[in-house]
Image (cartoon, rainbow, N blue to C red; front, side, top):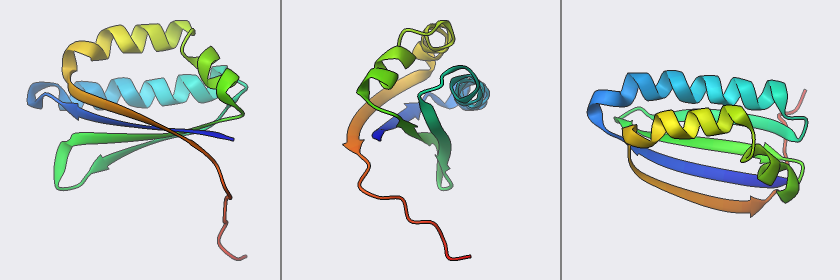
Length: 101
């Protein structure tokens, strides 16, 4: 599995609007992309301008396909003016450990 971690810093005036957009982006990715297995959105409780995405794809090709979707293009265009900084990290999933039943 291919892991993507994206960290955003959002301009203060856009935090709420960005939250709405990124939540919709997560829903669209999971609903419309067979290779997207997880899309978590997290916010720093001490600094709501800091938002983190944890995305899990079948492989790099599935992530590359994600970047070509219309919903990603729409999100990216709308979100760009809201973002003051952005970093992206890529990982290979080593193991998923579920809590005991």
